[in-house]
Length: 256
Image (cartoon, rainbow, N blue to C red; front, side):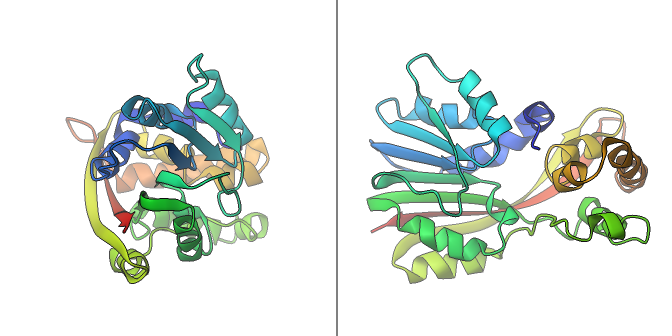
């Protein structure tokens, strides 16, 4: 189960790609704004602030995330939140802005899902997507090595870890090929984190969730201890903190 409190750790660092993504969306007066994979809702709330006259809807498959998001919603009901699987959920009408921040990497057919989402857009509508692309970094390599080890494979063989971004060129080809005005790029952030083992804490809120949720509590603690030892070695603390390089892929497109 997703843990909103754990996810909020290093919230400022996690939010940076969202705001870099939205900076390229120039929608002036949207009527319907969607946040697909909204998590605990704080970033969805910024969409409601940016477009005060729009209906803003956040969608997430995690009941815990939606409960947390609703508890923080404004008294006027904005934004509203819905529990749903972004692979098959659809809005009641055409959207003017569709945002998805760090969601597609969990889906086996992310390009197919993205193509489906484009069908939700009104004429002139915007779609903005950000996807992590750091699968080759030690944090993920260590996670996969442990999950495939003799100790853990019998318990985690059926667990699906996140799949990461396609290339910027793949998103460009899909959207520009469909007639969208498209901008695709990538950025590697150097997050400076504090705490005793901050890379462990970062991934406990995201990439490690399938492992944590699949194991009994005592075994999850054992896995996390082993993982934590290895990532502490891979990401040594410096005088000013622990540096976590994090590549992300972005695409913003507008229907003509």
